[in-house]
Length: 464
Image (cartoon, rainbow, N blue to C red):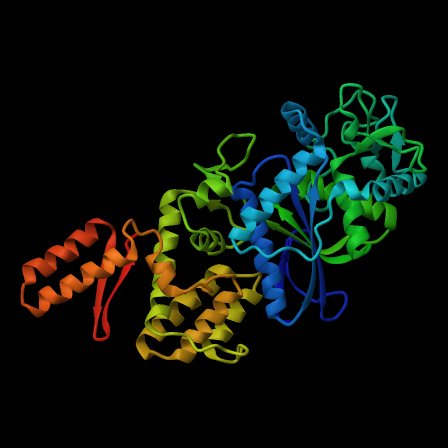
């Protein structure tokens, strides 16, 4: 493959080749599922949707695993607040997540493991770490990982041990051997509901009642689904430390092998120069945004910025994304595309698109090629070029809808009314009553409807 990917571990672009020729195994840390997903979450899932789409377009078979964390302090708190079982809450939120991301044409992963289904595997991994002297049970019953006993801790984040601090989800306890140590197994508390507790003794272990820590979940699930070493491990930039750093320590400490060959992290979505997050309260749920904008516009907004770059969220940027997308759909509406059986990657536009995507999934440059190809379609009226435009768009998950439906979506007037007014305008023009014809055009424009006259007749689209 000619693909190069930026590897967070080496801090460099590296040529990519899967461990198993022709088969890419990728694990991405998914959602902690206690509430509706916001646009920052969508950005992460969109980034790796584009990654797996491009790998497939490049002829690879992809096993894509994106986990769900369905046991966590926030989940327990929300379930207790609502007075519902934890499983009922997480089932509801998972269904909502699937609905929201499906609307954005984010394809489902090959596997979507839930943490609660892998507790025995997590306990087994903890036992191995204890046997190697990398884990210990504290006086409060928690089982912790001994960070300073794992050589190389900090290699992903690039910090020394003395610079590091315990992660925000890891409460520093007095009975830890070191403040940097993190929890693998949380001892049950009397104040927690029973459905938040697992009896490790009943599963053959001696750690008492409790539940897994956040970090051990992904080490167990990735190993169980993809093996001890796989090709790509992904997630948001905020997971680089401590979550991914701790995954490396746990997995490599237990297995003695690299966890993943490539570590890939997407940038944040920002609002007024601050990271979008629920803790800051500056977030917009996917559902909130889809009430204002069509799903393809939101998708286009998310993909036209490089996945590693920060992305600024605003109505102005979404409006600009829709205007830009309309330019391309206008070309496809003007020239109905020929269906291509496959893409000829030697064709100049396709070759440039491929070169952009092969350089660390360079969507900004790839989108620029789409605009240039749309200009070519308008110039040549070539159905084959229009077909290539649609086929290349499919690699990014865009331009697959009906052009006219996209251009006319969101009209405040129904189509029969608009067509009747267009017919009245045509009659007025034929009768040389240009004042009436201009008045009809102006009236439609006031309703956000733009008329476009051509030899073949008058068409319309929504101005927004």
